[in-house]
Length: 193
Length: 193
Image (cartoon, rainbow over all chains, first blue to last red; front, side, top):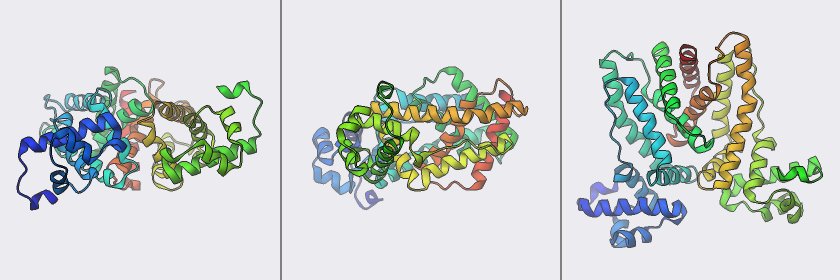
């Protein structure tokens, strides 16, 4: 990480820069996002931004993980089924409710073309998964799943189905979908884990 | 469909146009795809293309469903598990092996931003799903799933997990993943269908 070789940036300034990055991404798409634009919006010198992030992909990578707009706290409802329903609803909201949906969909769509941004998206998913893992640790402690269950598989089946249905099929995602998807995956995970 | 108001285009000419559309998409991305470029590559007059397809999104919509590069035949292995494993492997190949992967990933990435292209992607998924349905009809006849099982849910869980893992996480998709994902979803569908 380039940041570790520099003294810490003032948290408020860093937050301004990352928030401005996501605002501009939501407004203009990845093509229209520039370091110059972020500098102007956040009232920070362009060279300061470049000192911390060598490219707009690196800047967006930090913003996706650290900015408030995509902030994520893993649910803790007391049951694995409840936590997974909350996760599924969270993914659906992330992909459908502005401004987060503009950010997430623009970033993930652009990540498909751009190798540097693809690394940023990879970092975003790794960060999310690390925050989701306690859900599965608690479920194991409660005896809801075996040690052999595969948390990443469970998360990817559910989040992937939401992505496909909402973004590509453009179909609504009602509570019934969430309940049925979670019940199916949870039964399957218990039978095969 | 605009096409129904016109006499049929010669199949060979239509194929040339649709193949050229996907070639140019794979080479230049959606931004770089133009009707002019397709006309030059397919050696067809630009006005002929516009007579059939009012926009590049409409042209790409036809190409995604009809062109050879993304041709799809539903598997018929004799068991639902076998058919689903084949489907999962097919999605993985579509997303990872050129030239199909260049086409699919460019089209799906661009569909996220572009409402007209999003309709084309929606048409692509609807067409695929219609072709996948016989897999589930045969499975019901063999007694492998109930009438209440939800084929779109099963397909979206599996295909979505592949998309997330391959495109966003950039992780490999080995045979073990396919086997485990299909076993989990199939057990879950039987328990909850």
